[in-house]
Image (cartoon, rainbow, N blue to C red; front, side, top):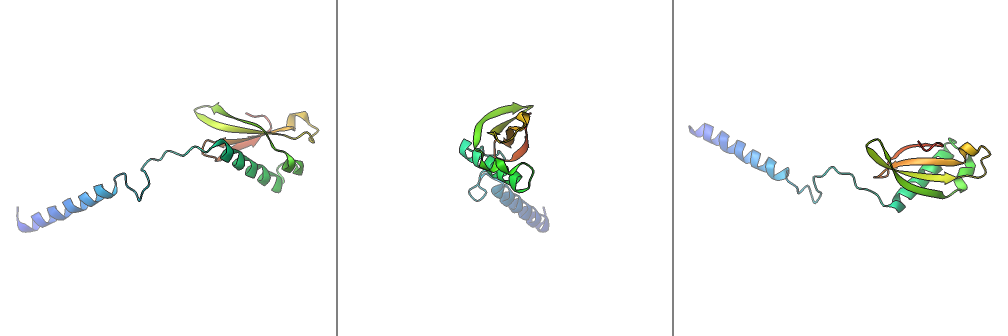
Length: 119
C-alpha cells in the first residue's frame, strides 16, 4: 500500500469507528428502543377527560357532557391492538342509545376514536 492509500484507509476506519460509537445505546442518556411507554390508568383517564372537553367545546357533543365523570374504563382488544375504552354516562340525554359515550385511547394515551356504540 502506498502512503496515500494508507492515509485514506485510516481516515475511513476512524470515521466508521466514530459512527459505530455514536450509534450505540447511549443517545444522550436515552435508550435506542422505539417502544412506546404505556401510561397509567390515571393518565389515560386524564387524557380522555381532556378529549371529552374538546368535543364539548367544538360542539361535537351536547354541552351537558361537560358535567359527567367517567363511568368506567377498561382495556379491550381490537384486532391486534389493545386499547383503553373510557365510558361516560349522561342521563340528561333522552335518547337511550346516546347516553353512553366511549372514548378510545392507545396504551400510550393517543386518542383513536370516540362513539356511542363502543365498537
